[in-house]
Image 1 (cartoon, helix red, strand yellow):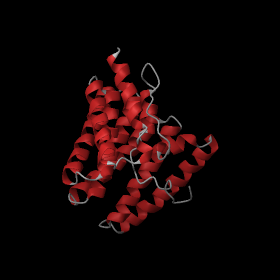
Image 2 (cartoon, one colour):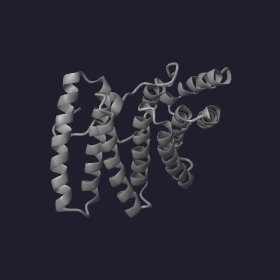
Image 3 (cartoon, one colour):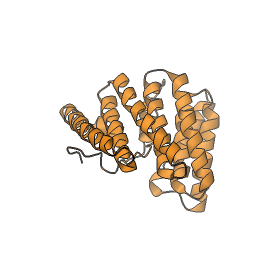
Image 4 (cartoon, helix red, strand yellow):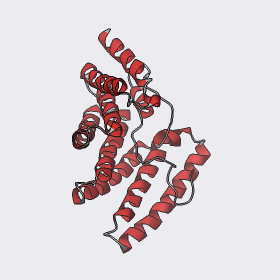
Length: 234
């Protein structure tokens, strides 16, 4: 739900594989990896045009309020994360209306705050995760703009953070599925498509064999298998 000062419900800055489908549309054929559950920028794209403008105005008003609150209490990490969420939400709507450069600027503000929080609290996985998502969102915009080398660098930074998170808690299924998303996005942006799709598939099969793969992620396996088949046939 959207409201004045509100964030996209349950967005939580989670990376979403449906967004890969949007990125992969820039390739010669459509992407196949489109599980259900659109959130974040996908949710913004699903809004009617009038609602997008309404949402953007609400998020901008919320940002102004949050900036004042953060300035009054600069050491408050929750105030800083509120700012981060505002820049993320504004970026999501700007992506949906095709204003890529403005979206990129919003996501870079998201990145700047994430970097500060992650550096100040290196042991807090939430801040590290937010930082990985900020790099990913920047990569998404850069891929859509055809700036693939820059996008790949952003995705590599996101992947590096997620690999560290996974190393600290290898049993965490969320970190594992984050890695899947990173490898698929790396496949979209790089020439190493087969290697990245293979790694993503290996993670999913391992989780499935252990009985820990969420049910809504099981359909990713045949989707990635199809991507591998298509890459192999080229």
